[in-house]
Amino acid sequence: IQGASTDGVLSGKRVVITAGPTREPIDPVRYITNHSSGKMGYALAAAARDAGAKVVLISGPVTIPSPEGVDVQDVTTAQDMLEAASAAVDEGCDLFIASAAVADYRPQTCAGDKIKKSSEEMALALVRNPDTLATIADRKDAPFTVGFAAETTDVAKYATDKMQRKKLRMIVANDVSVPGLGFNSDNNAVTVFWPGGQRSIGPTSKQQVAGSLIELISEHLKDSP
Ligand code: CTP
Ligand code: CA
Figure: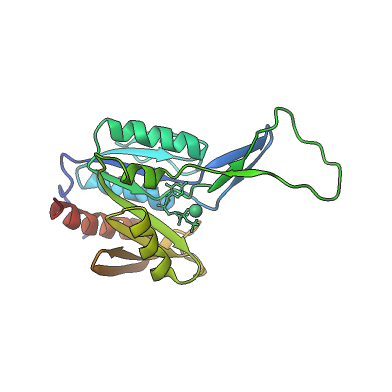
């Protein structure tokens, strides 16, 4: 059944998706990162492709195979991700979906040599990373922009706040406190919010969630000015 309902709904559309974690170097052998397998974003890329879209997938470091028929662009840091996403949107983009788990902060400097241990305590100075999703949504020529929100409490409130703050058309909220769902799992349950409505999807496989998300997003994209 899945696939039939989204057949061609994105035909001729250009879709850019971010996925996976980012990796922020501390020194040549260490980095900070987030939990993220990339599975949800990769499943979305495949679902958008199946719906007829031309898909660019901007991916942080993951260990899952690239979806066929998708232009996968590998990036490492949050700064790389912003650059690659901006360049991809410059090429033309109808729909932008940010599913990446971006590191909010990076080490202020990356040490040239491996940091040796010395005292019992050490502090690492961190600086804010750029927000790819907010930057794309704020463009004059912004595509229809969809974000994710991974929350552990007050999911609806934080997610809808994020949607407004980042000027998103829709936001996909993930309760990452539920064991066995989200992050590294093959399954997910999400609630999608848009101004004036919401819909829950799952718990089910990330492939099924992705298909339903593409279907729902396409309906809103079709009706958007
Ligand atoms: N995002 C992004 N670039 C960042 C941070 C987040 O593109 N530097 C995107 C994520 O891909 C996701 C959305 O913004 O689609 C929300 O990410 P989230 O981490 O939940 O929100 P933040 O705005 O970073 O807020 P916080 O982590 O403080 O809850
Ligand atoms: Ca964040």
